[in-house]
Length: 475
Image (cartoon, rainbow, N blue to C red; front, side, top):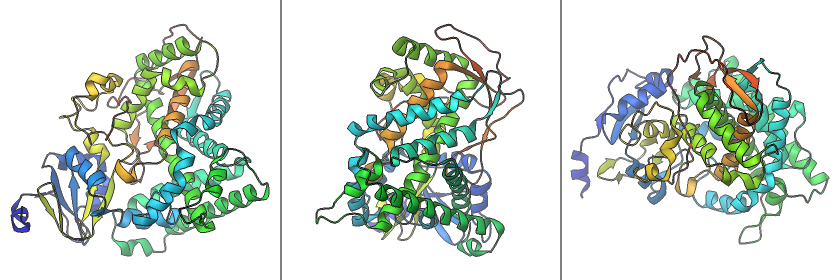
């Protein structure tokens, strides 16, 4: 089809464009509502973010084309990646082209599926440490606890020393600052990034802190000549085709990426999982029954993960309803087309896992939390590209297997021993303006279970919409 014919095709503009800001304010103030509303306008819609032209891809087939078949035409670029690079340098999460391919090849051995069980003890120990401090009837700041859990797992997996309490707190604060700062900067005009506000200064301090911690970790690992099976050992021994290792800058960029992407996304998924289980005690009971049947009274091991299919389906549904990376951009490097839709050079092209995962064509009653959506017969009914919590293609999250292993381990361990309920009147919503879809004010009351015995604890009235279950599908 010719370019002129493609130009004639209707890519509908999203209503509500404002002078100067375009759709940026609507995006920033009610992002999930905005995405769901525009989805009904068509497979591709057009928006304006300040002076930049944007399009949003809503069709799963086109999303897969974007991520898998057309990666050289639609590249990682634009405000999200420019701002993120201030924190992670040119790490795997933001890099592109030949450099990205080289880095991914060097990083891949540390994330091979066969290697993941080697990190399982760190996952279980961190979970046991967290729940060991709980007392029955206590109300827990679950977001704080889960953030500590996931940062601790990164530290134990990264190098022999692990993080001190001070380092853990520094990373938690800096990653939270990054998520808040990257989120709003991605939607606001670039000149606003340079206004010397207290928030802007905190953003810069957080970046400096993460880089300083990464430098310390690398130096400490080198000083102790640690040859144990940890991420840093793998990264230091990695060589490209010419025999070149990672430079210190490249190594630091990847370590900082692990600090941020490796903790925030897992903590977010676990937080939403516990929130949804608290609203659906029958789901928590089924996880409990499954873990007791498989484990009896012993701790979960790496070999047990594949024997917990219901728990895995719960996790998949959580990632459907609340995908941590809820909105991601690409930029066209020349005039091109996606399907039959003409897309000009320098257009920011978004796809939203959140909007796609809530499309009633693929997920009837999409707000409903139903782990059994992820039974094999149900998965087979949906098109490829309709489930993309980790992306797809060459930029698919390299740590997805690690993340799933950690989430299932923690959820199984918690649900086997504890019942979670919401305090009366508590309403949990996503935080606005964040790069990751974090919950806001997640307080949960914990009650110790008697292993193997069905129990019922009165839950607070459900004042929010039901959530989602988890199951794995290929994009």
